[in-house]
Length: 451
Image 1 (tube, rainbow, N blue to C red):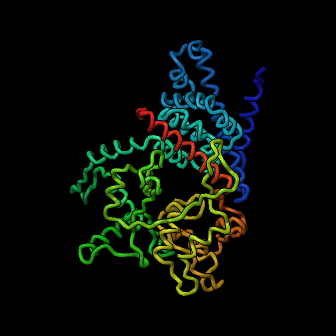
Image 2 (cartoon, rainbow, N blue to C red):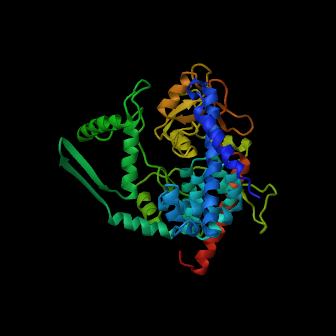
Image 3 (cartoon, one colour):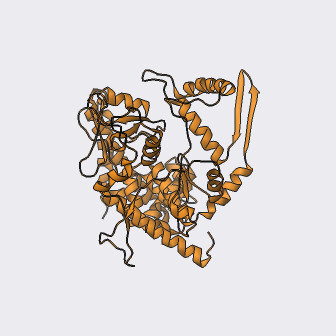
């Protein structure tokens, strides 16, 4: 039996929070309030989705004189038809993915995460999403919806990489760039293919980074000012470097992909995602290739049901071996170009501070060069954007490596842990999920099923 008093209690609790003198709260209290509001909002969004779906199925809109649920919600809830449709679809998704439903009801994910699962179910065979539900849910509970979207897209592309080639060809056909005199300046319009757009974004990210720690200009102002400076220097001398490092594009590709093995994952362009083999082949024609060891085949007794060894992450004792060839100790203070490539790859091209997505990185010694007599070794370096680097030197952030795992841990000045890096269990789950997706891809390849 449904208790109608719940609605009155909900309104009373919400009104009490609205009337509270929130401006008098401390920052710690505000953080607690914001966390409670966000988690409660996620719970209420889930109730709204479930309620709309049940209301529609039970004939509620017709009984209320509306043509359908979208018409009723537009009239009574002031929701547009698109939002109502997404809410009802989200309710159907939670029926298909029960663990996602459980996480939403517990407030561990938001409705926007469920929308990403809905989009994944629509774009791909549900077996792809259901096979990876545990891992994708782990991503959702740790990350923002855009990160989940990127992960789902990566899984779909791993099963159907041929769709990347078709999209790449469509993009090449739409290429255009125009610089037109408009009013007091010039308007830049157009559409760039993946490679050209990635190069332009890399340069603009490079130009948009602060010149120093005291640079308070807006990123847009920095980009335009530095773009003018760049164009002047290119016309005179060629593309300049910054701190001895020129902006680069980074493409990561597995050896299996280079060997043309069925089921291998597509190559990934940092800042974009998966790319087709057509583009990979063109980029490999005039690029430097740096081999990086990211895992090892270890027979530790963990086998799948087929008796095959799982690919597992390097053990802590093994981590030092791949990096040792890049270590320079105290022989020089600044990181080498090879170390920068390794750090950029390890961090996915983003700042090491959780939640910060800045892509221009300055390398920092975890054990400081002067204060702690730290070494310029790969294990002692992390990449931080200029702002977060400044926070660290100001004492508002601290960095250390966790004993045993070697994971980088960032904490606030008060010691609150910010880093929530993947543990070994999650890394193993990711590898197992990818193995399952490779098997699906191989099945599709061998049976000739159309993507």
